[in-house]
Image (cartoon, rainbow, N blue to C red; front, side):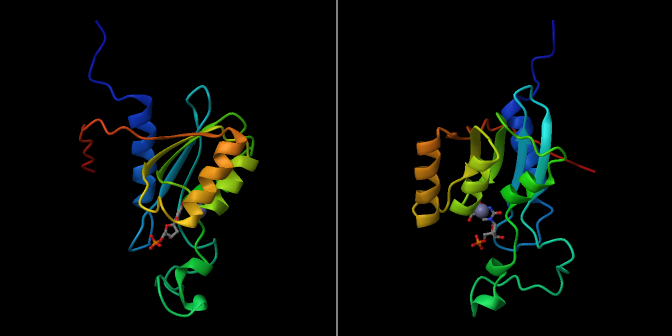
Length: 159
Ligand SMILES: O=c1[nH]c(=O)n([C@H]2C[C@H](O)[C@@H](COP(=O)(O)O)O2)cc1CO
Ligand SMILES: [Zn+2]
């Protein structure tokens, strides 16, 4: 009989999204994304970070202050990074695992790239206009979205 204690596809890909998030330099929100084909092959990964060539040590990571001195002006969201990192750029019909529900800007990129399903972990900005706008666009365009169902399984990495 086959082994029964294996992790599901959802646990596998959300786990990889969480691992990707651990690369983030953001001290408040670490976000990771994993894009997967209908055949369950990983197409791309991303996490929130500064654009390539912008030195992490020279960029602001603050949340407050004058616009130009906050991270928001510069940081590239995990979802956009995952979309832009995909080698062949054909994401039609794929699904995205992301550790935080996407903002409206990422929602636009998700829709335009043909991603058809979104599985998210945290929804901590559920009531913000950005999240409301994302849901509005997903509903209109038929992009399915669902909250990841935690299994309670602890996955420990000791490397
Ligand atoms: O969908 C998202 N994807 C994503 O990568 N981010 C990033 C941008 C910032 O680095 C951080 C949000 O910062 P904060 O939670 O401190 O406002 O998370 C934020 C969102 C949603 O706000
Ligand atoms: Zn975003």
